[in-house]
Amino acid sequence: MKKMQGPILILAAMLVCALGTAAAADRESPLLIDRIIAVVGEDVVTLSELRVEATKLHQRLAQKGVSPMPSNSAIQQKAFDTLLLTKLQLAEAARLGIVADEDTVNKALDAIAANNDMTLPQLAEALEAEGIDFQAFRRSMRDEIIVRLLRNREVTNRIQVSKSEIDSYLERAGGADGRIAVRLLYIMIAIPDGASPDQREQARVLATQVVERLRGGESFRPLAQQVSNDQSALQGGDLGWIDVNSVPPLFQPYVARMSKGETEGPIAAGRGFHVIQLEDVRSGASTIVRQTHARHILIRTNEVTSDEDARQRLAKLRERIINGDDFDTLARSTSDDKASAIKGGDLGWSTPGNLVPEFEAQMDNLPIDGVSQPFKTQFGWHIVQVLGRRDYDATDETRRDLARKAVRDEKSEEALENYLRRLRDEAYIELRLDDETN
Image (tube, rainbow, N blue to C red; front, side, top):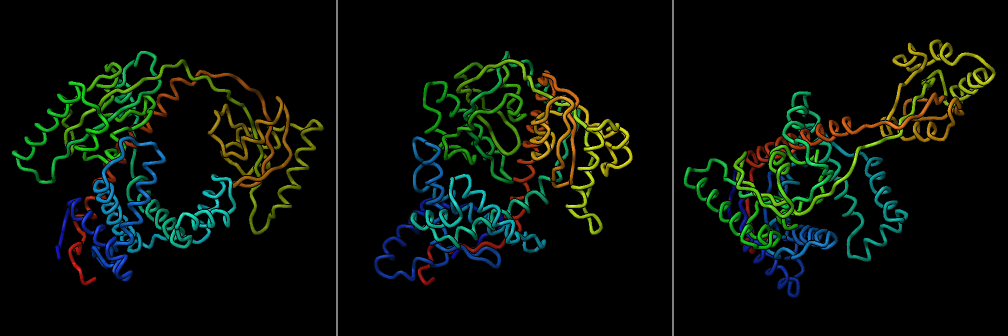
């Protein structure tokens, strides 16, 4: 048995051996399939869980068309690390009292079924046909939701992006000569925590050799699968198409001046050395959006005002407006949206996506000066009037929004990595890959 405290360092060969042993044992003694291969705090990882996770990962890579496909050992190693991190995060969520209620899980399953043009019973049948137990799938979905809630609470929701950070990001991005998106390939050579100068130099030398091999004509994807320590390694380091304003800040100044097919690196930053290749680019023009100027009256429901009461009140207000009463005056005196009520219900010019979908759908179906029938959103009951529409050049706003997202994503990724590293460092992990008694 191996007792581990701190970063998880698993040899892929050990995992291959474990799975191979299980495959042979499957024919002789089915009870051995579920033997424990790791103890994680008060939880365990079983060999059957590892096999299922590795199968799921292989299927996801196949669906993405990843070529060449990573070796089984690489897939199993990634699956094992994923399972351990999931166990640690679920334990932390339980400690903090974070749960996923049945209604939330049901909605997530309904959404998956709808996205596949199925009913929930049809989804269950489809999963069973693929050998996936529906209740196990449901538990997996619940765990994913809990992990997402934990990450939002402990990491994502704590990230703040300042105006100066956005300005700095855009300054580094430069003009990008009309590019709207780039396709990047990425390799990271990691530096171990607490690395010695010799270890750091070894990583630098390896990264330099990688750059030389790429510039010498070697194919990026197979090399990334062999040497990269980033999670994108299984996909050959392919980061996919990225809006130029969403390129990670670390790479922005390089991408801005790179030509198609060019390789940059090694870039020393953070926890390692980074290598990127600009595989392809897309060009485009300005961002023109159709904006709508609208105003509304809101009636909230409560223990005194029912849905029907709110609907009837708004129906009467609409009738008065149609008959000539002033919308501005009625909004000031009756609307429960105090922020807009003092402006006569005026919401100003809105860009698609700024308002909740139900509100936008009603607004978009109205002619200029049209007043909607009463309708309900999560905020209450509304009537809305459209005052005007215009085509607006939102290129600058779009760039700033995308820059804000890029900076936020970069900071979130770093914060999440540090958070998960802390969970690993503080965890008790006991490996039993070579334990034949469990």
